[in-house]
Image (cartoon, rainbow, N blue to C red):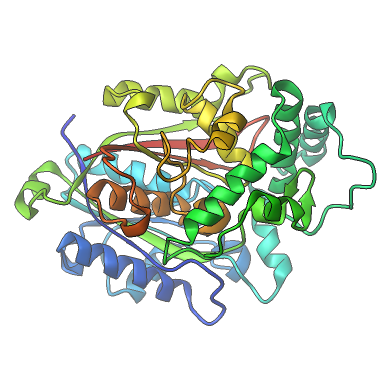
Length: 410
């Protein structure tokens, strides 16, 4: 298959923007991506638009991409709307990659945008309610309770605070990991402290205050063992990428182009909880390594889907950056910190950069393209040539409903 390239990337600041529209936020990312690629709106031949929340928050259940595209002066350009929960924009990138690779065009604009914050806070939390099997939530909850039963909260632990159902999902997975592998709350806090410290170097991050492990542990409990800084916030934001054919990349000049070495979209399965070798993210990562002709030791910088700090810890294992069960020790060792053996979430990750769910996958790509170009400034990873993004969406059984692994190469 011919090489496909990311020619430009753009991203808005992530945060809470009650006074801005979705189109306004998306325009910031699109304008930056097109300028970065050296292209104009009239050069765009197709649009792949990712969004997960506007149906719930604003009632815009359909034609979301067409509405935003027209507001951005891109009316008439074909639009594909893509929703895959938190993996929406990485799925959109996968679709754009396949579209260009099949010869259907030379320039595709991929946009992920979500405006999750609403004056009606119940609407914001309701976004997450539909990202699992709504026909039988009682069975899903019972399964998770059983999974996390091996390690119980200490006596006197406060009742959980307001949260999405997914925080309880991650809390159960964390307790299972603690019981099976001896992972500690301090290990999870080390991940969170690292990411909050990284985000202080990212001007587009929602939060930019460094934290210590002790501060993370002392923060308000959300769902044991997860405290507030260990959990991704509700965010507004957008990210965009311009994907081009090999021919177009040569025409524009490849000086800052980044190659999509592999893009793998997979779905979860009915595996047993102890069968981690069959985890959706492990299967996707192994396939991506195979397609790219690369391995974990080739990867120099990583962005993973840390909707909670525990998720990053587990993903480092599933991506084969360390042996299964060793994710906590890897984080505690400093190996995943900027300057360490394999820096993870130098952007600050979802916990601190922010998590507008339809934009998250492309925010990861924005960071990794910036890193591979050597343009990340104070958070630059030295000598990075290969980068990996892991983006998961929804939850079914004991794992993500959808997962996308993207390998990029300079």
